[in-house]
Length: 173
Image (cartoon, rainbow, N blue to C red; front, side):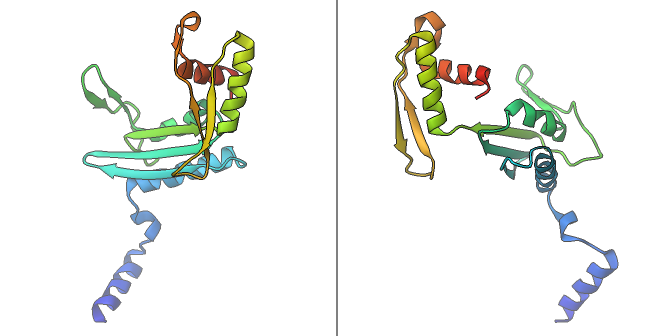
């Protein structure tokens, strides 16, 4: 009991706040959440942090709505560099001491299966293609899943799935 009282006294003396005791990646995730909520109040984001041996990261995920480039424009300052595969080394090119930062930030914009299906119907009509798909219930998620038949599109110099998602990105879907 006296040890507990001592801890409370030390905490009061140092005026520690549990928020300041979070890991750097957790602090970074918190700051990113604040900025994204301010910039895109109607959009729901999942922002999680992680760490590993000599690394730290934040993962941002959302469904439809805001474009990846718009999210990256806000969050890239929280990444203190990038991996240079030519020399197999992480380079600290964006270090800032005024905000918490991590090594890696991953942004993932998910699309609903029906949105992809609608886009495929449009692409088929526009290009005279016959890209087939099947929407099914997911075994691990509440969202539906879409299976796109994969084949080579000679005139587009692309696989059908790649072509669909590239077209969707160009259309802003």
